[in-house]
Image (cartoon, rainbow, N blue to C red; front, side, top):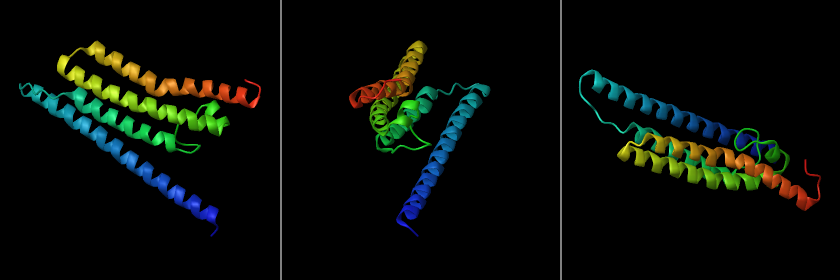
Length: 165
């Protein structure tokens, strides 16, 4: 067995393990949310008012999950399955690396903002503030890295003297 084949086999096992862990965590997260909602609605049906901070119990773990994935982004190599896959990052490995460093930072900030806004909503019940915070977090964590990838690709192409498309 060649070195390349062993390395490829090892990477496939690692990717399969990560995929199984991520799927299991997401299933447990969905189950947890379902249980919280059922408990709350059963309490209302029985005439009791059970106060469960659903925004905090749902959004705080979601923010933590976003932060965990964002922490992994800067170390990912160019691949076909995980990461910010735009035409810019697929074309250029340096663009991939810089975009994922930026996306990791923005994702960490977005996850932290989601946690902060869920805590604020839990104590103040200002829904519009929660909505604005989540929309801002999505724009920061998902949209800004895509825009950044094209900006970085243009800079790289200008530095290399390539034609900017």
